Every structure is written in C-alpha cells, then in structure tokens.
Image 1: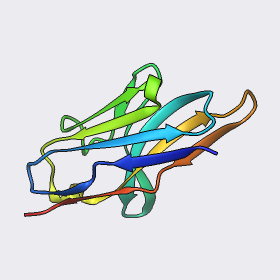
Image 2: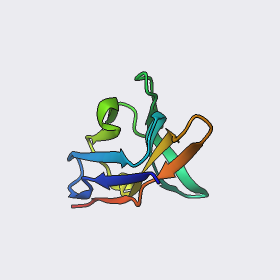
Image 3: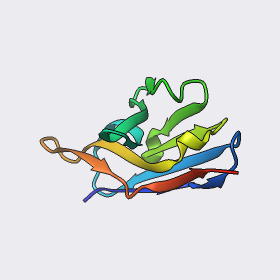
Image 4: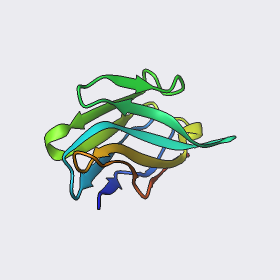
Length: 120
C-alpha cells in the first residue's frame, strides 16, 4: 500500500510564504505525475500545480508566478513553495501521485491534506 504524507501547512499572514512537502512511501516502482490540489467552489478539488517525473510543470492561473512546484524523484517527494500568499489561498492542500506499484498495477494516491490559512 502506498501512503502520501504531507507537512508544512500552517497560519501565515497575507504576503507571506510557506513550503509544503509530500513524501510517498510503500511499494513503489515509479511515480509519474505528482502534484497539489485544493478544494474549489463547484469542484471536488482543483489543480494547483503538477510536475512530471521529467520535471515539466503545470500551474493554475491563480498561482502562476507565486507558487513553485519541485520534485525529488530519489525521495519520491514533491514540494510546493508558496509565496505572496493571499487570503483566497486558504484551503486544505492535498498531495497527489500517479504511482506505478507493479508492472500491471498503477494507482492514483492522495494524502490526507494539510491546512494552509492566510490571515492577518
């Protein structure tokens, strides 16, 4: 079984910064995309940022220029550096990974979420 464990959430003032981390553990042969999602009105979760194993990244328009996603493939980890935070960034942030478990089994995994609160 694969587990994703997030850390790094907390309370920060508007304009501040936070760094989220997510590490995958368990039976893992490889990981394709890893990313971060958060709840959004009318959606279960919206994409915040994703990164492929080769380093290509994709961002929501609302976070472009403020958030940076990065990966450490050797550690099966993904990070989200968040800067210039706004109150509307307040949410539970969920880590996501597309995990290859065996040659025939591939699974989308989610973490439990980490709370980010932006408030003065």
